[in-house]
Amino acid sequence: MEVDWAWCCPDHLARMYLWASVPATGEAKAAGAERVITVKGTVDVFSPKVVRAAMGVHFRLPIAYDRRWDEIEQELRGRPILLAEAGGEVPYHQVDWIRPSALLVGGEAHGPGEEARSLATGTVAIPMRGRVQSLNVAMATSIIVFEAARQRSLQES
Image (cartoon, rainbow, N blue to C red; front, side, top):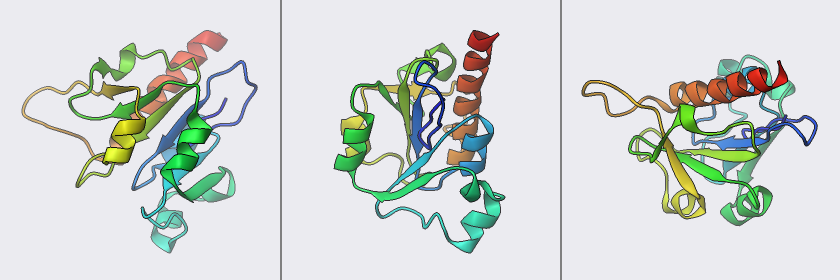
């Protein structure tokens, strides 16, 4: 499998690409990710705090960092690219995460930028009750990538 924060497996299994301004690399790897991609100008993925928080994932998960949007677009060409946001069109659990796809997640403070929005082919949301508007990026990413892992494990059974 491949994921973006990314995964590496045979091509017949799902590929997914994830990136964020604050990468949840540990969660991505635990859900089966093969790789992480971060956009130029976001967090330093090799800063001591990020490396410590990821608990060694940097040594087991390829990280493509400081990528330009045109490079990311080239790499993701040919697959659905879903942008996670509070007002997304489709609930995350209704997305077919078994097929090769990409997930874009934005920063907590300002959300996704215009480049991410223009690259996205659709939007996905985590339905929430009450007056909560959003989750932090690591929590939201975890929920979505573990749904992808759940769907793939059902396919493999």
